[in-house]
Length: 373
Image 1 (cartoon, one colour):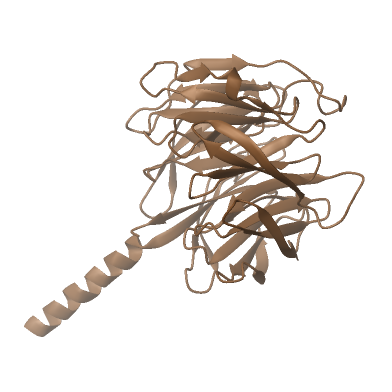
Image 2 (image 1 turned 120 degrees about the vertical axis):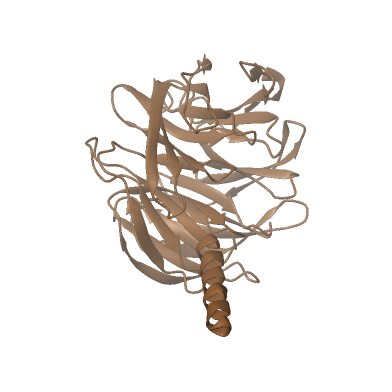
């Protein structure tokens, strides 16, 4: 009897540990401007890369970009995006089984919020608004709920492409590694705008115009990725198809390289997302139009060396991400409505496709959180 009791307790403890040691993947989508399922939560099998759907929301409009809070308890989502109205930031609690519980939402004070970031102190949430061309800061409570915005800063300016750069278009909001600066790639004005971020202030964004840099005219900076060693940062330019590398120190960006992300020269480029492997050895970037993911090796001096391109096995790879273990890359192909799982060779950086049979309507964002590691 004692042996059976011991065995039961052992099996129970193993199940508890297994339940805690899991990788959840959160997927945002476009719902064509009408209420639909919207956000999907999958559990990633850490051995074979298979995706198991554990939850999806209902009656949500265009939850196009999302991010997990640093403590892993909450999900913050850009909703009501790409509509002729101010969008919102919606807050959800992440339950232990991977399901989501809606908490509340607050105005982003701008049209088409395309990027949301959470400060490491779990008290501030920042929205980059493409349509309005501004940045908005909200505060959050311990229960994850959001308060109305405390700061919203508009911008002005244009660049050489009169159709797409007629005004500012902030495309992402990126905290520095220490979370003491915020960088805003502005596609509309060809700038990477810099702000000091003072978490002790009620209005934490402090202008740092001396740190704002001008990028290549017509390039259209979009997303950024900081190297794990905190010495380098890379920006992908949507309109030029280039990746620009910078040395980084105390808020200062110093350009060291510009290299093509696309496989072929073209009349129109539409590069999209950029990420660095957890070990800091490789950089990946997706290119829409030609539907490829570029693979680069990162040298010790921060320079990128092209290793090759891999098909995304779908159309319009708007977003992708690398799982926390570095073993898998998942690409969200917006136009072909599919998620593609690649296994990543940690030694060579190269990718091999495992599956492209996960169908999701207009996937636009992929974020991971590993629990129990």
